[in-house]
Length: 132
Image (tube, rainbow, N blue to C red; front, side):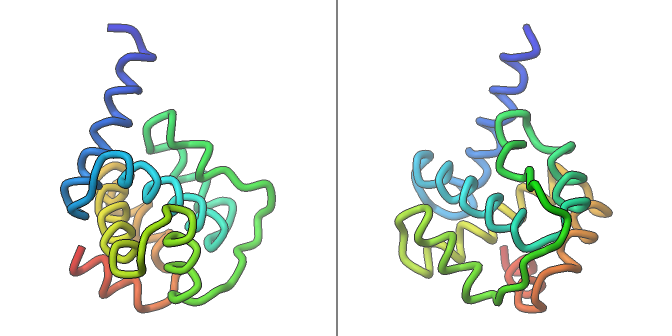
């Protein structure tokens, strides 16, 4: 199997995890994944976003690339609003989706990288991840 096929399969596995955990279609899971990763990249430092990007499937890496180092501070509610708007879903679906994406990201990136990134987010994310 060629590298391109392997990475496409890894991306599909990630999206499938999100779809299953959030209880949404694959298309909605893809949008929730993209929206969550883009919003996460904006909210955390460039170094943390880069560390996560190195550990996700190739097709998802561009969503974690940011051109500046500083994090943009915004609230949990704003994070959810941005993801809901990007994915075209309601707030409860966005929250389930973000929880599912973060859970899949934890599985993929590993505990240390994941907790380093999560430390930069508002405390509400701790409970979201615990329930996700």
